[in-house]
Length: 199
Image 1 (cartoon, rainbow, N blue to C red):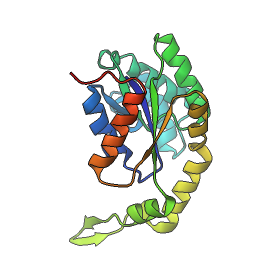
Image 2: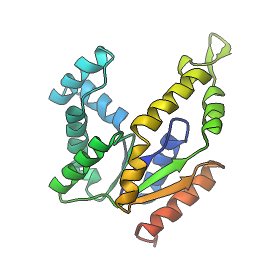
Image 3: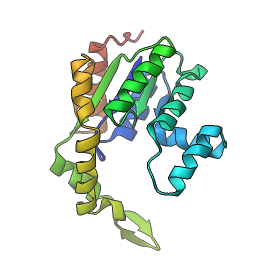
């Protein structure tokens, strides 16, 4: 199966991506991992991306899409993949569709983890880390920062939900509950997208 996982910061995407990909027997592919692999591997795309990253700028779509396309062409992704954190915009979604068509593939399903915004703020601003023996809050987890991150998500990435809904690929998942409960809902939704049944 070829799956995209959408959801705002704090929805539990990273956790669910690993579990669902494991259940499907496909690689979980995050853009963060792709960037790190290209930069550390000093690939041509990685070196181009590093210029933007070092300047604190967003890496342009054409570089990001090219990296993702290269990753999806690798042997372990031939039988499927789960994309986490990509696409982030409708433009990227359209480029992803074209890239997959070039590879003779298409997406099977888009899962959107849905969580109430107040719950997201509570989750994210509740995170702490240990520094010099003290539990402290990360700057990007302060409530006002969290609300800003959610606003950026709403403006840039949330429109993907409507885009994939009109394509008939979107399944919304209630992401409130235990990790196991959310995973069960996601896998049930994938069954509806034509996931081959186990066994």
